[in-house]
Amino acid sequence: MTPPRHDSGQAFPIYLTVVAGLLFLALAYLAVGQGAVNRSGAQTAADAAALAAAQNARAQLTDDWVRVLSDPKKWQDIFDGRAAIDDPCWRAGQLAAQNDARLSACRSPESLTFQVDVKTNKSVGRSVVPGTEDVRSTASATAVVDPLCIVDLPAGGAEGDALPRLSCDGGTTWDPDPHDPSGLPKPEDLFDVHLGRLTSER
Image (cartoon, rainbow, N blue to C red; front, side, top):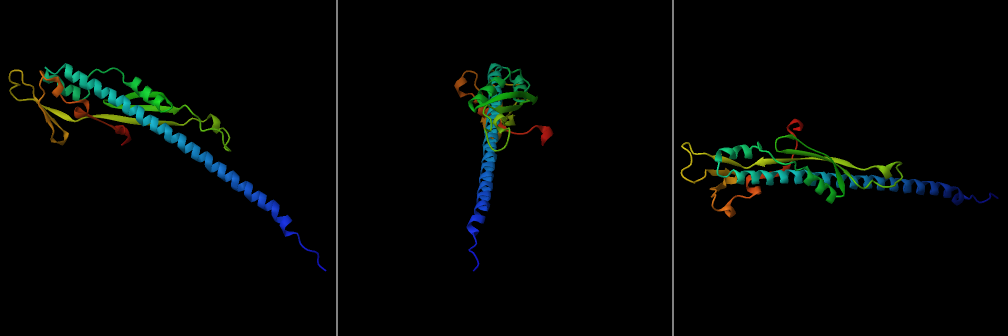
């Protein structure tokens, strides 16, 4: 009589190996997911920081325009970014911090263009992938300030205290009145701020 075969005992080690392998794969996928979340957070912080720098520059340019309102010949220089503004990168650092990251670099490689680099404060965390507990994600972003208006300087010059008209995108026109500051266009009426790329990257 043939003795019974113990197939169940032989299959148990194989079962343990398969389960261990699947568990390792699950942990590896979790590590990949943690890394993706960390990188996404870094990019969010970089985008916010770049936009913050550009928006701060836009506000300064608008203030400059209001200061020279009575001298229309200087308007176009301001709309073209040819005006002295204080470094807006402090604002980029604030927004990076609000998104749990720190500003690594902030520069203006082109007129009205601001590029930032950030690094997350939190690491990817411990995982089955060695070394991830010390890895912090980095990201870069570029924001651009685009002027929306052109100055319609009359050929013979403005009459009296009248200021020239501003023609802006979308067909909007403004007739600035130096005696009515509340009726002047806002920063977002004069300049658009958006994420973009450097000319060399296009």
